[in-house]
Amino acid sequence: MSAMTEAAAGIQPRERDIARRETLRQLAKSKTLIVGVLIVGFWVVCALFGSTIAPDDPLELSDAVLAAPSSAHWFGTDQLGRDVFSRVIVGASETLKIAPLATMVGIIFGTIIGLITGYSRGLVDESISRIIDAFLALPLIVLAVTALVGLGSSNATLIVVIGVAFTPVVARTVRATVLGERELDYVDAAKLRGERSPYIMFVEILPNITGPIIVEATVRLGYAIFAVAGLTFLGFGVQPPSPDWSLQIADNYQLLSSGTYWWTVLFAALAVSSLVVGVNLIADGLQQVLDR
Amino acid sequence: MALITLFLLSVVVFVMAQLLPGDVGRNVLGPFASQDQVDRLNDTLGVNRPLVVQYWDWISHFLRGDLGTSLQYQVPVSDLLGPALANSLKLAAVAFVLVVPLSILGGTIAGLKRGGITDRVITVGGLSLTAVPEFVTAIVLILIFGVTLGWLPVTATAPEGASIPTQLEYLLLPSFALVAVLFGYIARITRSSVMESVDADYTRTAYLKGLSQRQVVGRHVLRNSLLPTIAVVATQVGYLIGGLLVIEKLFNYNGIGQRIYTAAVNKDFLLLESGVMIVGVIYLVATFIADVLYSVFNPRIRVQGSE
Image (cartoon, rainbow over all chains, first blue to last red; front, side, top):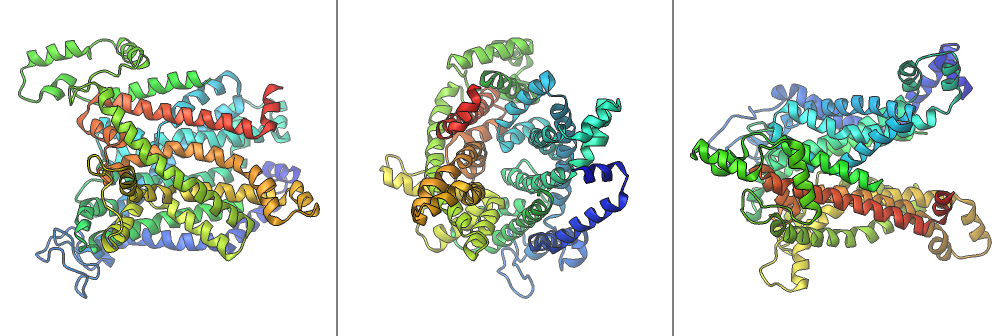
C-alpha cells in the first residue's frame, strides 16, 4: 500500500506510470473487453455516420409497405414502407446520447453523496442512507414511469430521471468503497496535516477509488440502455418518428401474431441485444482488471 | 429501522405522485365541464388542501387498509389492486419457481467447472440473457414457441374459469422472459460463492476426510454458497416487479404492473400512489425476509449481531 500512497503523493511518478501501463496492458489482453469494445464501437460509428452509411433515408415513406427482405431492402420495409436496414443502422443514435449522459448524472451525484456519507459516517450517513434505502425499494422503471408522466417525456427529462434513479445505487457502491479507504494510512496522514474534509474526500480519496467508479459507470451504462429501451417500449421514452430500435419493436410487435412480417421486429431486437451485451462485456472486462 | 425506511418510502411515493401536473378535477371531468363543477370536485376530493394534510389523509387511510377511490374508474382502489396483485404474484411465483433451482444448478455447475466450456457457456449465456431487455427476449420467445412452433399460447390471460394447469400454461411464456433476465444474476452470484467455498480450507478437509465429490458439494460447498444467493434473490424481487410492468403490458396481462401503467397514463394518482407503495412494501418485506433467512442459515451473523 505504501508504494501506492507515495506514488499518489507524487514522490515516485515513475512507479505510478509503470502501474498504469501494467493496467492498460492487462486491459488490452482481455478478450471480453475487446469483443465488447468492438461491438459498441460498431454501433457508435453507425450512430455517428449512419446517415451516410444507410442506403435510404430512415424516415422516408414509400409505397413498398411491409416488403419482405430483398436485394432492394436487405431487411425489408415496415408498415409505412420505410427501409428497415437503414432504420436499424441509425437506430442507436438516440439511445447512445441519452444513456451515457444519464449515467454521468448518476455517477456524479452518486459519487458526491457516496463520498460524503462514507467519509463522515454518523448521523449524516445514517439519515442519507435511510433515504437511499427508501428509493431503492422502488424498481427503476416504476420510478421512471411515474416521473416521466409528471414531467412529460423528452430526451432531457429521460436523462435527468434515469440519472436521479441511478444516484442512490451509485452512492451505495461508492460509500462501501470509501468505508474501506478511510481507514488507510494516507487518510490519517492528511488529517494530521490538518487538511479539511472536502479536500481529503475529493483530492485524497477520490483518485484512489476511480477503479470501482469506472466499473460502476459501465455497469450503469448497461442498465441505462436497458432502461431507455424499456421506457421507450412502454411509450415514455424516445418518441416517434425516431428510428430508435425499441420504438421499432413497439410499433411492430403486434404484427408478429400473424406469423409473417418478422423482419420488422427481429433485426431491431438483435441490434438492441448486441449493444447491451457489448456494454456488459466491457463492464465485465474492466471489472476483472480493475477490481482486483 | 425498517419502519423509518417505510415512512420515507411513503413520502417519496407521495411527492412523486404530486409531480403529476394539471388540475385533478379537470382531468376527471374533461375539458367541457364548467370551472364551477371542477372546483366543487376538487373540494370533495380535497386536492386543494395543504400537502401535509393530504399526505396524512392518504397514509392514515392506507395504513387502515382504505386505499381510497380510483378517480378514473370510480371504484375503490383496493378492488382494482387486489386482483391485480394476485395475478402478478401468480406470474412472479411461476417465474421464481422456475428460476431459483435452475440458476442455482447452473451457477453451481459453472463454479465447479471453472474455466471450462460449460462454465463459459453458462456465464456468457447468462450474462447476455440478463443484459437483453425483457421485452426483446419475450418477443423472441413468442416468435419461437408461440408463432413458429405453436406450442404455447401467446397471451398470458387464460380464458375465464380455466383449470390451474391451463392457467399455468398461459403463464409459461411471460415467466420464461423473466427467468431469462434473472437467471444470469443469480447464477453468477452462486458461481462466485461456489468458487469461493471450493477453495476454502473446509472443502479441502472434507476431501481429505475421504468424502466423495457429491458429498462434499452437497454438505459443504452448497450449504455455504447458498447464503449470497438468498440475498441476491431477494434484491431481484424489486426488479421482478419492475419487469412485470413491461411483460404485463406486452402480454396484456392484468397485473399490478399493468395497473400502475394505466394509472400513470390516466393520471389516476390515488391508484398510482397505492400501487407504487405496495410495490415498495413488497420489496422491503422481501429484503427483510432475506435478512432473517440469512441469519438463520448463517450462525456467524447471529453471533456477531448479538455482540
